[in-house]
Amino acid sequence: MMARSLGLGFGIAAAIFALFHFAGPWFFLDGRRSFQLNFTAGAALGLGWGLSINRILRVPRKAAIHVMAAAAVPGMLILAAVGSHFAVFFPQLDPALDKVFGSLILWFYGFALIGALWLARRA
Image (cartoon, rainbow, N blue to C red; front, side, top):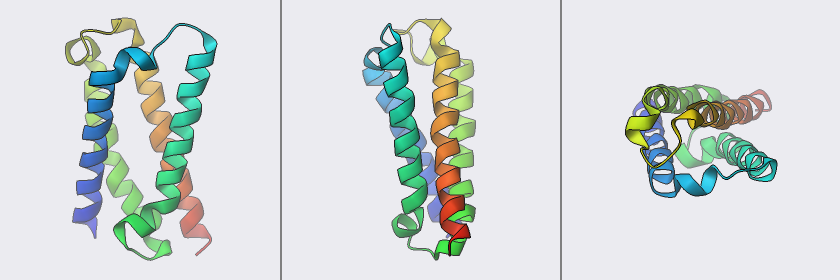
């Protein structure tokens, strides 16, 4: 169960990295509207992932928070390291966007953990 969670966590982190590497300029547009849309989408995707983690990994609902923690922590650690060297990993983006990237990643994983906790508490 934990090996699948860790594998999923590394896979999600790799997908997020690839997404920002190839489509990063489309995420960080000027203006409030794109900023709000990014954080709304991050929250929705994270919450959806958290609420469906038991079905994705085929575990009981009570175990949702445990498997989500095992999936989220590797991704948060990897993407924190990426964020600390933002200009190296994303040379096409403004280095000042590292804080926005880090906030968006925490927002996504925080909502994923909230969704899994809600799911486990209702089991």
